[in-house]
Structures are given as structure tokens and as C-alpha cells.
Length: 247
Image 1 (cartoon, helix red, strand yellow):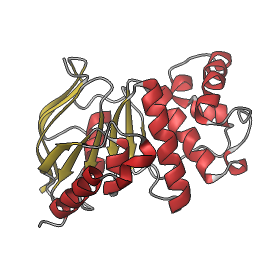
Image 2 (cartoon, one colour):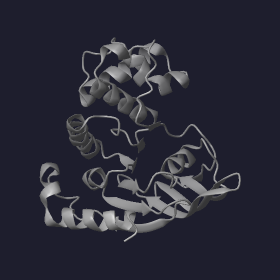
Image 3 (cartoon, helix red, strand yellow):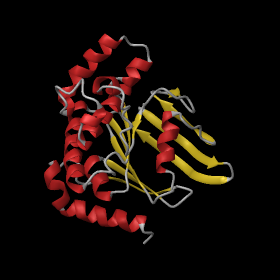
Image 4 (cartoon, helix red, strand yellow):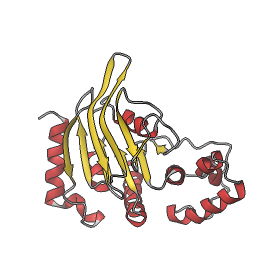
């Protein structure tokens, strides 16, 4: 049984078609990247998975249960960290647990046990304005992970960062994913980021977003630092870029 399945998903905004014929399934521990031009429905796809929107047609199942249009199963992380400026790091990271009614003392213990995993040990009582951009993104990632460690939904999580910091956090995320065996859906505009962090790539065409190409990442088993220089990585990058450009 798949961990997550999207079956015959179509979605419209009033009379505007946004997504068409989306059939996707993820096995536990699998990493999927979704690419496509702006406006093709990539972010909407994540909102459908989270239950923040209900598809016009089709259904979404999680561990065999129909969760179509039902929020509360997952959190997701976007470009902006959206940390609450009046709350300390541990409160921001543990927000989903606090909203579920978990006692504050227990939430703090859970968060503090995970801070070293994301390189934030010792920063539990810091406020967002006291953290660097990279630290804020890692705190946002931890918040997403604590909402549901089974499935991480990341929407351009490093898109607002400079090239060097983005590269550092990509390597950091790759190591986290390897160590925790999390399942991932990553929405990104970067073909290179998709090939670095995913095991399978889906390319959506212009709106309404329909799958144009689906491939396994040829270099997924290679060491992270070596992948961008491998012939199979470069060949796949070229092929995916051609699909995105309609060539």
C-alpha cells in the first residue's frame, strides 16, 4: 500500500482549470520533486494534499484512508519561514503540538530533543529576530517535521535564500532525509535542486498543470557532493529543462 495516493485529481478555481489528470503515489521513505512553470498548479497540489483545498474531482488517500479536503494531517513549509515574531524558537517549532493541546512542558522537551538534529542546539529561547536566515529556515523545517514526520511537504523552501546558503541547506536537508527516512514532496523551480534532493521527478506543463514527464533520478544513489558533475545528472538535467521549455 502507498503512503500517499492522488487519484485522478482535477482542480479548478471557479471556471479556471488549474490541475488536470494528476495521478501520483508515494511509497514510504520516497522523495518526489514536482517541477513546472509558474502558475501550473505546483503549490496548489500541496494545498490539496494538506486539505487546505478540496479537489474539484478525484480523491487523496493517506495510509489507505480518504483524506480529500480534510486538513490537519500535514504541515508544509514555503519560501517564507512564517515564524511568529512574539514566540520563542521552541514555541514556533512546536506550534502544531501546542495546537493539539500537548502540554507546554512536554512540547519543549520534544523540540529540545530535536534541535541538535537541525543545528539549533542551545537556541530554544531565541526569538526569530535573533536568528539568521538559515537558522530561521531550519526552525521552520523542524516545525514542519514535528507536524508530521511521515510526510514532509516543502514548497520552494530555499527559494528566497542566496546561492551559497541555499547550497548549504540543500546538503543539510539531504542528510536529514537520509537519516530520518522521511517521505518528501518538494515543489521547486530548480531542476538541479530537484535532482539533488529527490529520487523521482514529475514535470507539470503550463496551466492547467498536467504531467508531461516522470522519471526516476538516475544519480540518486551517488554521494551528494559528486552528483552535479556526473554525466547522468547533466543528461537528465538537460532533458528535464527541454521538457519545461516545451522542446
